[in-house]
Length: 125
Image (cartoon, rainbow, N blue to C red; front, side, top):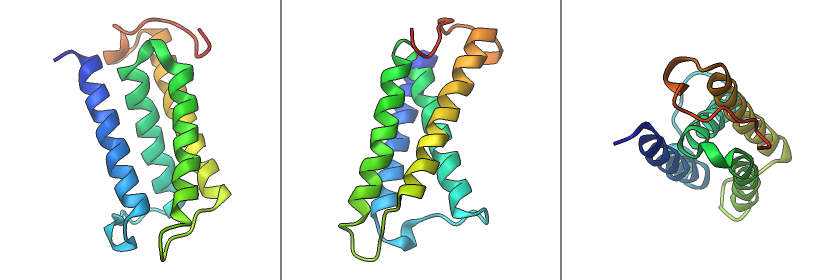
C-alpha cells in the first residue's frame, strides 16, 4: 500500500469518526483533558493533513471540502437533541483544517521527512 492510499483511508476514517463524535450523544465524545476548542482544532488539523497527503494534487479542493464539512457538521448539530452548533466552533475547525493542509504543503515544498515523494506545488496550483 502506497503512502497516498494509506492516508486516503486514514482521512476518510477520520471523517467518519469526527461525524459520529460530532453528531452522536455527548457521551461518545472522547475526553482528553484539553479544552474542547483545542480538541476540535487538532482533529481538523489531522484531517487536513491526512487529506492533503492522500490527495496531493487536489489541495485547494480538499480545503474547500473540509471547510464545508465543518460548516455542515455545525449546522447538523442543531437538529440533534442535546447538541448545538456555533459559528465559532466551525471557525475553529476550519482553521485546524487550513493549518493541517498548510503544514503538509510546507513539508512537501521543503522535501522533509516522509513528504519527499509528494509534488512540490503551492496550495493554489
